[in-house]
Image 1 (cartoon, rainbow, N blue to C red):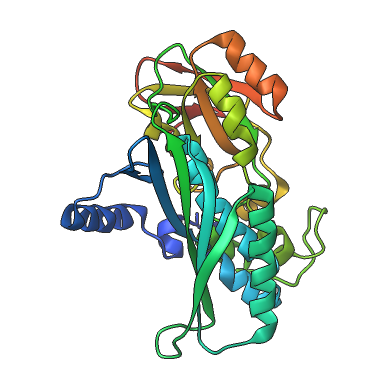
Image 2 (cartoon, helix red, strand yellow; image 1 turned 135 degrees about the horizontal axis):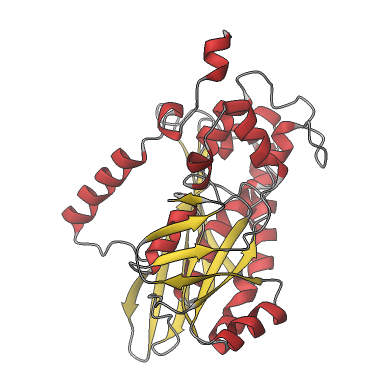
Length: 326
């Protein structure tokens, strides 16, 4: 690798994921089928309450698992990415189905995936009610894992979903990279390293292990958030801190974000990734945020969970964090 290559700033788009193109494709799909855009869950009125559905997968984190032949955590990721979206809508997750597509069947990795799904379901207090395994050698290289989660909510239990100026923002730490931005992370990590190389910042034996740290599950926040009168919540996933804008057109000022874990420092250094790109791709240490109207209620919510007040909502637009304007 030349000096010029090493000094080049790596971006998500250059790594292979163009967010603008992805959003355009998503908009085209939504327009064709008549879905609502921007919601964490699809809602179906079933009388006295809503049935909510969410679907998501693990993404290219699977390639790290494949390289290490360690599939023990990706089932947790699959559960977490789905249940966390339902929690952000104010919905209690209740049941999950998985879809595992493989190039060829293998009892070893299938068992590991299943054990991860079972662990994630237990942590989320949901039931695994079925799934599907498809063998498609002409379509799949390796494997793909996705799932769908069903939840229930009384009609008055859903979060409004819109923050207002003056609201306080309560945040909860992430466990690490979670399951977004792995294409950028993998590209940065493998420019000069292998996944099996020692992780240079400690805490993990290998680089791959640091990238595979499973997504944190936030279902324990649902009841405390309802009691605190949360207006809306944001699951900090793809798009990083710009997910706060899903709470409405306001200015979100983050004064005390959680420290970014060492895995982010490693990715940024190895890929020469800009601060802005890091914060619009990754969670950077904060995995979930809620907007609360009452300051004392916000502090109480932080005190009674493992969260803290991280900022406030103001008039305007955009997100201000760590000296950046996103």
